[in-house]
Image (tube, rainbow, N blue to C red):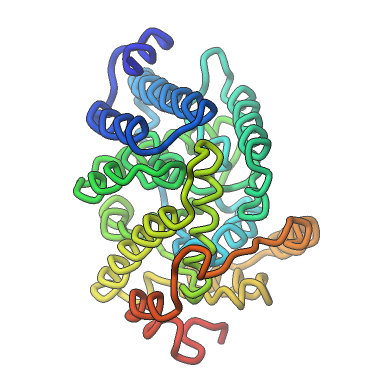
Length: 385
């Protein structure tokens, strides 16, 4: 049993809130009965879940031994959210070059708690993250065309939420419809409280490594559906919502999910991946539209994907102006250097179409009509001034 294996491996017994037992039971049953995992997929999930449980046990122990971690203040986080495939990764990595911001690199979000015998430098966790990414790309080289995987670069903090087994991460990695349906009925407030505590832990570690950011930069599309939960934890948060027509983003994301499923299953079905992934995005996006109607407009900065591609420096400067930060010459240089050293053309082109995933243009227009009418169809709805 995974819970007992984790306890034996760490020598620890106690988990903090939320209790992992029920989500673990629902998830493992779905993986066994629905995911059609191959041998590699079964090994991957066994190790991944064991690692998550060990992280949870270790996190509880670190908080017990270092009560000062929970005294860390997370000040005015800047949170990038939007449909996937809308330039969120590029924006996050451009801004993360500015030392004014704390951000979670892939290795930190994936392994937020120091490993046994490791100093706070993260050496063991960095090695583990690099090995994990290398294994993913070896199993499916096509993934690099979908996302610029980099263990040392800023990445999605959903990987922190994933430690609760109450995030949409699992469904991006396997066909698990019963878990998907179960998760939609859960109150994810405890998961977001854990996420906030882990940001405090990461900030505490960063300060001990000599870093001195002023505010957090975060990025996860799942946050679209949980804006009000985030504001209860961080009332001074500001959101950057990125926009691109779902006619492009939905099949692109379906392609990404299908590629991720294929890494652990010989029976991954493209149309199943499309149905499940698009339902998640549709649900979260509609909840975002509802939340925005009741919130002050200044809580949000809308960014058109085409502007991010055409003039990313101008987009970043507009974000800085909105949150009252003067953009330094060093930050401008960081943006220029990143764009020069990370050209999109250096990665294979991501090929996809509506038809291969069973979508029609009419269906996407119907399902996302409210969003398209507000943010896509009006000329200049979120473009640079």
